[in-house]
Image (cartoon, rainbow over all chains, first blue to last red; front, side, top):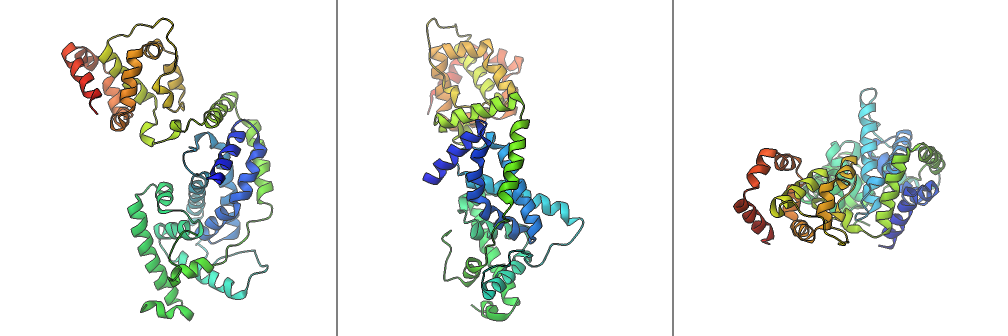
Length: 186
Length: 181
């Protein structure tokens, strides 16, 4: 709640003409929006563009933000749209990357990175509808209600879609072999 | 976390998946663009944004609350027509002040501004009976939502229908129906 109030205060300052008040919002949410874009697009540069566009679009449209809802949910929805638009535009020219093309090469354990690559490959094997709900739920940590709001579908549909998506994801991870083979029978 | 089942290994795989850092120059790039955008806003856009900020700082959450209470011009004018039907042509009250329940709509359209400056709205605003009737309408979410339908608003603004609704008996019935919870 405190976070939501802080967000609303920064938004209000931006609307009064103080564009510097947008920086704390970018800092707070850039990671999650970027992760969303990266998981949806599978490409670092595209994800960067989509994230940047999402924040810029959000700033332009701040006067349509409804503070009765979380700023994050609203921003996330813009992020999803920007990612999908970018993907649509690119689709005509080149195929989607099957794995995560990240430039972030520092620090993480090889195991985590490999797992990440497998998850990403499986995610890219899902339909757009399935991938969206999985990414929003598991990487964006949005509630069912917030996902429904962002995608303009009923909460019930979110739950059933997520259930099917996770099943499909399990199959894809299992098909990828390794430690996930047991999922077929589990 | 989002509360998904940790014992579910699909969920666990997702939870363990690497969350990369955003590009280090992202904030700088966004803020540079945002500063340009801010300077490029028209005076009208600035005014509109400031109005939105005022509403936020005044804590008028009702303005933004349920979607069914988001009033556009269609809803407001339809409600106005209904009130005129119920009350006839309200006289401008002397010395009456205060705001009307209509303060709960979103001023998002210049046409709404135009309506606000109209004599019809002035009369409604200053007439206690009109305020009461409008608040009754606003208290009925289903009716409010219905009135926000542009098709209904258009129908209510049709002169022929308004003439028909001028029938005292019909007006009484409409008024009665509106007051029924």
